[in-house]
Image (cartoon, rainbow, N blue to C red; front, side, top):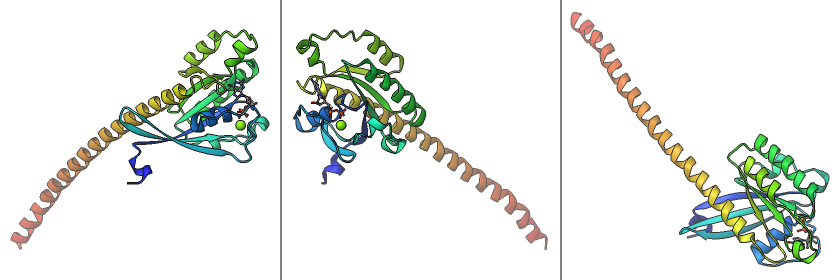
Length: 220
Ligand SMILES: Nc1nc2c(ncn2[C@@H]2O[C@H](COP(=O)(O)OP(=O)(O)O)[C@@H](O)[C@H]2O)c(=O)[nH]1
Ligand SMILES: [Mg+2]
């Protein structure tokens, strides 16, 4: 059996956020468990795949990273269209990078709709200890809550909370996927009942139209 076929779920997840907040580092940590202290310049939009197991199910994540176009605001809907989930990353030492998240959330909801699972990630928490940075997550948490998004504080550098963020987004995407399948199944059932009704109605109609023909025939 191919690996593709053995995956119960296949999801597209996009990484969004300002340049240098750590999107590529989060991806590199999650997929290869590595960290690079230099800015990872991605020449083309890169794409990484990782399979995870949860609840006896196999989830195949296709994760899209930007090629640095975010710096020029050149990321278009083509990048995030058809995605099941979005991880919106900000740098906890930059309030500006958090403001960008709000813009992305608005755009995603407008273009992709409410079915997309949004997870907000405040990255670089190691700076709190190392640079004695003071950081109050409260306003970010309440913003996340107001838009129905989960919120995680991560450090790609120290490998903190990265797996958790990907696991939680996967769980929500699985839930939405299962709910949609259930709704479709019940729609199909209603549809086939309607078809059956129509067939029965038309059989009756045929019988009714056949009756006069027969009598006409007999009347000849
Ligand atoms: N201290 C710290 N630096 C990080 C972390 N994640 C990324 N960086 C650094 O931030 C810079 C930008 O990271 P990168 O992944 O290229 O950001 P991107 O432009 O959003 O993809 C690089 O120098 C990374 O080494 C982190 O968790 N902690
Ligand atoms: Mg990058």
